[in-house]
Length: 354
Image 1 (cartoon, rainbow, N blue to C red):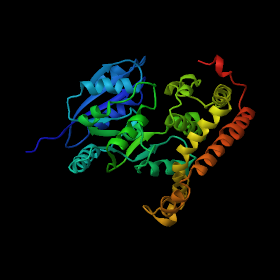
Image 2 (spheres, rainbow, N blue to C red):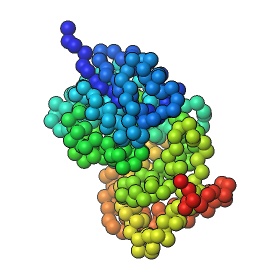
Image 3 (cartoon, one colour):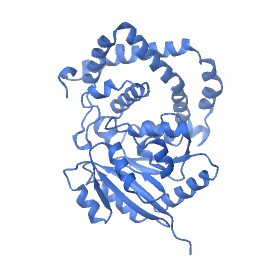
Image 4 (cartoon, one colour):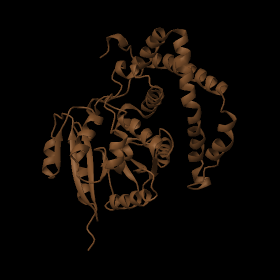
């Protein structure tokens, strides 16, 4: 009888006593695979560690920060294959066996490879149906900046160490950094099945507010502007601290940084943002495909194909990078700040924020 493959599942936690039992129960029900489960806790003050111990899994206390937590757990893992999962994930019983089969088949081609799952959002409120469908459809792709920790990262431990593990510079966005390293040094595959993830942060903070902030964060992170993250007030709160997201302090900080950058610095920053955003205009075209999916059918993406074959080559010039940067400046400096200053209560000034 062929022994079941061994897989080390690593779960970073911080006050996840409410979400963790469902995930651990799903992992216990996995078929045809032997699991080593490591809960890497960053200092929970609820019953997270007690929950982990009640399920008989390894519980590891580390310094706070998802990157540091997952790196510490990976160093303790004994399997040759690692799966990094968020605590609010849910899995079908055969998901991990099929994922391992897909990863092992892809590895036979010789190139370093990692896998991620398409997402299905678990929601408790109605509304924003099209927006969620778009995010779910986008999670199945393997394009730049579309792969994140919610989708699960499955890869061989040697490849993980070759990449240098997760960055520990910031308490968040460690997944984006590793995802793009994987894309540069190997390739991503979309694993079979779906991983269910909670929409709780979108629901508590407001879908469009969170998505706007995510766009700003991804742009500044991708061009290496880390000063924003060190100074932004409450940019990524603990889940139990979330409520309606207030964006005025963020835009106040942007205004302060404009003065610090000066005219020349501001032009450089927004030009670099234009260089980042222009290749990502495919997302607008793909959104049209998702809107028309009931008519087009699953798998047909004429607007995305038009972007890749015609629109992107025609706009692959510095002029369009500069134009995109200018439009980005108008959007994030001239339109959004006045709007949120009008609709939100008086925010604290960013120089007093912690």
